[in-house]
Image (cartoon, rainbow, N blue to C red; front, side, top):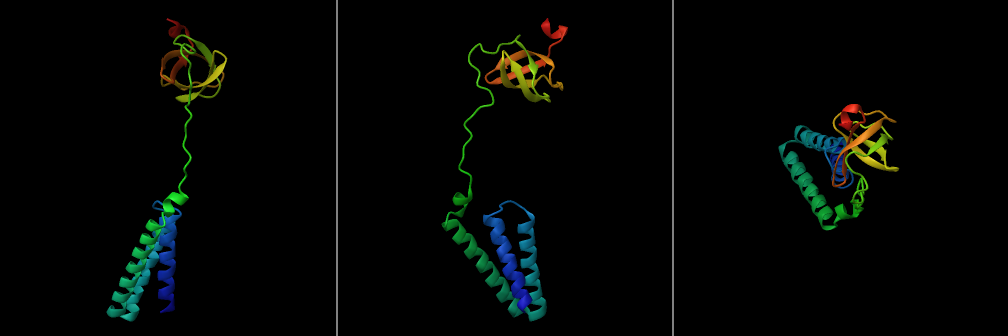
Length: 158
């Protein structure tokens, strides 16, 4: 009997941890549900139908109480990250980078990477090709804060 109670208590604790501290379908939540199911199963098989029904009722009542307490205590907002990202990948002044400008890749561009254009580093996107580090590149298109580049070859100068 005590091991059935232990299974249920540990299952409820793991369910609580899953729900409020590590949300998402993880090992903790699955293990908690398995332990709850085992506790209920063994209460039916070892103690009979009446004890099994009582175990199910008490278990679900405790789970509902835990969910309600967690919802009322606003535990999600206390645990959530309230930081906001306000930066942009590129902040390009008007006419600072234009189609036709050349530069060099600072990192591998596959298809996104860093390049130095007009003595300033930018996040760039290739036309689809992999571009190695320290490769001469040419700006094909600038659209908003998105810079599209290609390897600077005789074909890109046309």
